[in-house]
Length: 327
Image 1 (cartoon, rainbow, N blue to C red):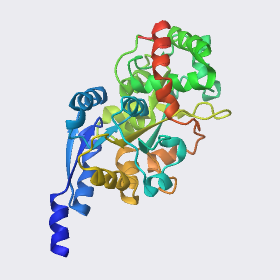
Image 2: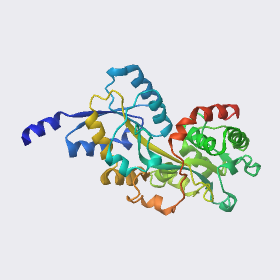
Image 3: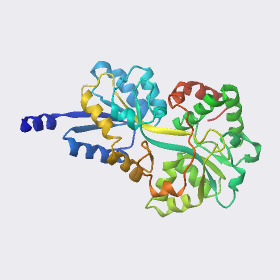
Image 4: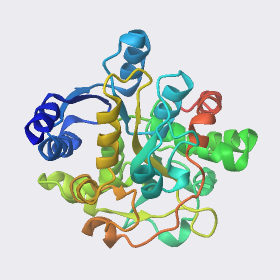
């Protein structure tokens, strides 16, 4: 009986479509395979590319799991009918309600906050307060941020739409654009570098990018990261904006049981510790310690907004960013 079971396990597989860079997900997938005997076939690509591929493949898609690094894409996949509901006590008991889809079609596995970083020599953190304050004329020519095509900025803007409405958020976006030190360019690490070399005084970035630079082997990245500090916005109000990496089981998953097993593994002690230590992300489970780097930034108040709101307001956010001339 045990030999039969072993034979079944060794033949099992699960196909993961991942928008996450291979080096940031494969180690934990390899651990899953070692523990279960289930082979993980990893296909990486851009989130929009993978979603389009799943849509075109239809019922013949080999995808069992879609994994992305932003909730907006997960919501989009759900709206396109590419995901299915999963009933799992492990997932619902491990993941707070705000960080999973109301129909259990996607689940967050790690958290990151989009924060303000500032030049420690030129900015008094006492002058900083909220995301909304970034539109104040006092920051004229002092802010660096990625383009409006970046999903992290779209989700931040969507959160403002959810909290403040379209009109107020468009006004905010116009103010932010007028305060930019340069046209949007590059990724989050480039924004941190721009602050470090004096091109701007503030930047808006995800926490794990700064943590990654602080733990980099590159002396240049370490020096740039050490030139800035983290400011947690909106701590006297709703809290700092939160986004996630997450995953859902595809509508036509040929290996559904193995896919659910892998999702449940992603919230295990082992996987959550790996997310904290290797990726410098905040574990989705509050009982798993954060990395030493994140711990050094202290505790913060997180926006309790249900993350599916970021997907719901994504299209409106993109439209108003265009109207505000956020390139």
